[in-house]
Image (cartoon, rainbow, N blue to C red):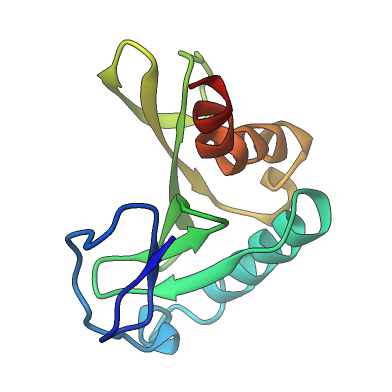
Length: 141
């Protein structure tokens, strides 16, 4: 792992290109505290309970969810939170609002979480696969 001497963020690649801009987490939730913040908190709690520890990196673009690499992103919206994560296989599910093929073995999935019931076993299974995807790729080399 390489740690940026300026912002102290950690990256798998030495001198990884990134922004050192620090953005307060609370700013993502301004005027969105009633729904988005509790959903975000519930998502983080579920990940930590069911998958493993995470670090939150608040950037101007979004909120990164980090294990030993960034495995997901979250955007606070007025009535929900939007999330993305990457997997090494194509999954068809009506919960995905968008799927992008990055390569033969990499897909990025976007979904919206509108209530805490949607933070379920199925979502946790996808997030768990994303959480460990970088470790899987490393162990396969």
